[in-house]
Amino acid sequence: MRHIRKRATPLLLALGLVGSLTATTPAVADQKTDRAVRGPDAAAIAKIVDRIEEPSIPDRDYEITNFGAVGDGTTDALPAIRAAIEKASADGGGRVVLPEGTWLSEGPVHLASNIDLHVSDGATLLFGTDTDDYLPVVRTRWEGTELDGYSPLIYANNVHDVAITGSGTIDGNEDSEFHAWKVDEKPDQLRLRQMGFDGVPVEERVFGKGTFLRPSAIQFFHAERVLLEDYRVTNSPFWINHLVYTDQATVRGLDVDSHRANNDGIDVDSSTNVLIEENRFRTGDDSVVVKSGRDLDGRTIARPSENVVIRRNDMGGEDGIALGSEMSGGIKGVYFTDNVLRDGASAIRFKGNLDRGGTVEHIRVSNMEIGNFETFIWFQLDYPGELGGNYPPVYRDIVFSDITVASAKTGLDIHGPADAPLSDVTLRDVTVEKVETPMVLENVEDLRFDNVRFGDQYVDGELDWLS
Image: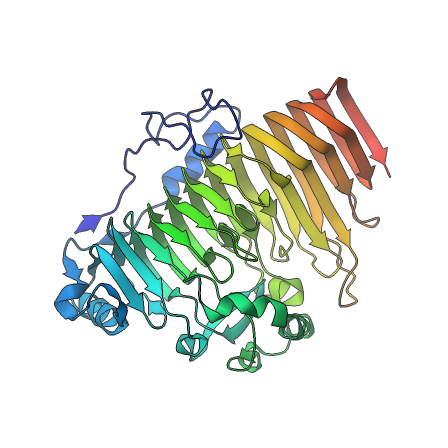
């Protein structure tokens, strides 16, 4: 039995040795992933990490070449991959190995319990370009609303003890027809949102051929004990790594380099007990996002994202980290620590609108090195409800500490709903070296500063109410 456990890998970034934040690659240090966590949240973080079990998978290999696969990049290897997965699953599980070569998959790879899909060093899993190959539809979640839609490129539904490992590449294909769908998706996007808002049964939300909602590259949907480790991924049609209704997941050592529209590096969506560490994100959208469903659909399912640790990552996306805007099921107990954020639009962003509802609380962001952003911290919680809802989101009990920012056009930008002001936010030991506008504040209460500097302006004390 192969018990996939935490390994001692070099860090992607060396804390205290970061240097220039405009560098294209992070520094490396021979430190271990299990070294002590700093700061007042150390005990809470350690408790979460200790409860996360990694997959237990039988110690036997199923190489796809033994099932007829040819790694020439033009011969469809999907029948062999499926056969290897079926055989491994029938035997009680194992590692399905893609050796060196380019393995074309003319359609999605669907994983099963007790399977490790291993993309070896020098291997590329290249997905085919024809969108029809990603039918029939599967049950999925798209921007926080459940539906039956196009299959993600790699998909696992109702599984346990599953992994994707290896230092090879997962390539969504630069020529995929999915990439062109962004310009056509709006009618389907709005129709799905209305269905979720109105409570239309999910069985009636079918978005197959003739619709234009792009699938994620990798999605786990109802999963337990998941490991995503070491691979590189590029050319994703939509969100890149998507954990939905997943408990006990470890995401470690990935090189995410994908710059298409809506290419979030990883989306933690109504998932619990998640560790995201030592990854490199270069993305066309947010690097790391925590979500929990949209509007009535999210509130009805009512599965929060909870107990999430994001540490020692090198992030370089449009936005660095984000919570929301799909957060109707709630978010609680999220710890960002010891990360580097490169340059971009918003370093830390909290999003919501008046259709959402839901509560986001007990969020800790600490020990961060941040580069040059248009906005350092942005709470944009008062988007008008698109569908006429009156469910203001609640964000509270949020602490930012031990953070250094090279520059920001706006330091702290807060727009809370008038009926549910942002509350109980603390900035402690935070320095923004250069800033044009230190703060823009609307509908916030219990905002506290302790040793905070925006440029040459020091802020200390409590602001009871600002609007």
